[in-house]
Image (cartoon, rainbow, N blue to C red; front, side):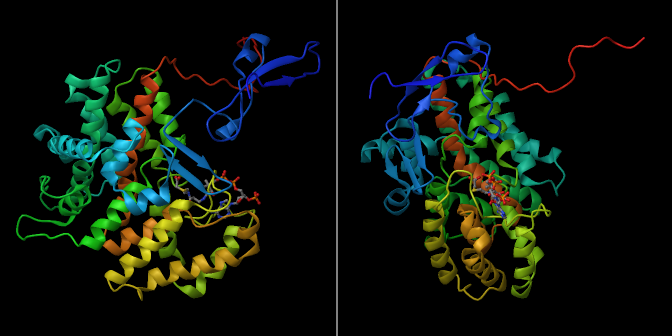
Length: 425
Ligand code: CMC
């Protein structure tokens, strides 16, 4: 409907303020509040619960219905029929590639999988027991010091080259952060393998023996990448957009996204799930932890449960659960005590009134943590894998931001500190 309007009546202001209402192709209408500042008013929305910070064509979520679409395609269909490289192309370009476009895209990404040899020396500056996310924040930011030939953010070709470089180099950098921690030599990428296989090879291969990736595991890995590829304006993507709005270079912006992702309320949750399962220890202790999670005076939360946007179910979690069962079966781990405990926790929480009433379902990180553990990925690498997968989402949003007229992001505040006063004496 054209020219829909919202009307705001405020005590003390005689005139009713008229605000345009914008309509997207999907989702709720959006009241355009930009004119309020000229009335001397701000809006207040901590946590951005009902604020659309930008217009975007990349991803749509209907949290109530458990819908997640990339370029209009449901995540379930992408997870089943597509693969990560295709989803990367879709997020960057808005359309699925033709077979020729896909071949060219994959081959271009493969051209960029190695990192500058000098960058590998950065790792020596870290303690061997450094958290790999700490290393990733550093080395991804450091990419800005190496690829000066593609840093003109107003040049569409430069933006594209940066996207290729980031998608191609993230698995290499991620695997190196793992190899550094266990003292094994860094493995150069192998471009004869596909994206997921190459990552597994760089993680688990050594120069002494041939490493052949298990196809079921490689497929599950690719699916983890697909399911984490983008999630519209979440905390880390909004961070990347905000950092990008100042004109900062893309590598620095992605490093800011990695930092925002690290927290346990966001990407750090997959690691936190396993830490929590460790802490619970055995199935008999689950009721105590459920009670702790329900206690309003206890800050403990069940990690891997709940989501800001999904109030019904997380469609990614549904797909991940199927993948989880496939991987556990393939690896003969159905009886693993920790994995059994995870299943029991899921069962109890899904039946408990507290979780049912608040619509707290297992989210994507609950199952991805279990799969990654089964594959043999160390717990502290879980969030790194999330960052690797989400890089395409971050760079697609960053690129979209720079593809149209834009301005620096600058939120306002409700100031409640002291009013102006004189310095004593
Ligand atoms: N365990 C126990 N209680 C919970 C949980 C939980 N995991 N999550 C929410 N609640 C309760 C919360 O205490 C509140 O109860 P009440 O209404 O009685 O005060 C109610 O549910 C609503 O919670 P909220 O804090 O308003 O929810 P939010 O939208 O601000 O937070 C969340 C969303 C994901 C941060 C939160 O559910 C959480 O901390 N979950 C655990 C961490 C986690 O798994 N995060 C990964 C999210 S999925 C991956 C990603 O996209 O990053």
